Length: 54
Image (cartoon, rainbow, N blue to C red; front, side, top):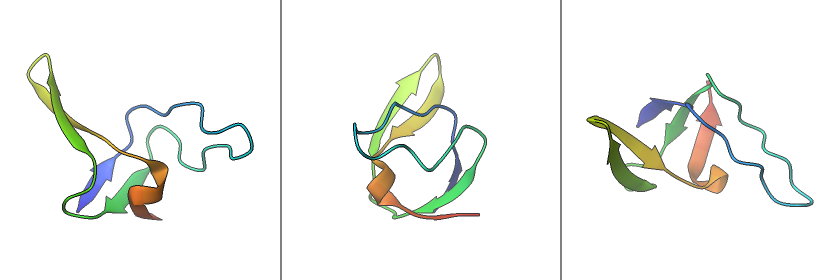
C-alpha cells in the first residue's frame, strides 16, 4: 500500500524519526489503525510498519 505522511510524532528518546511530513511511503496492507476525522480517513502506524520512503 502507498500513502503520504501528514503528521509525525516525536519518536523515541534514543531513536529520532526518519520520516517527515510530506514523504510518500509504502506499508503493509494490514498495518496501522484506521480512524476518521472530519470525514477524512487516516491510518495511525508505527514507523517500523513502514517498508520504504519513496
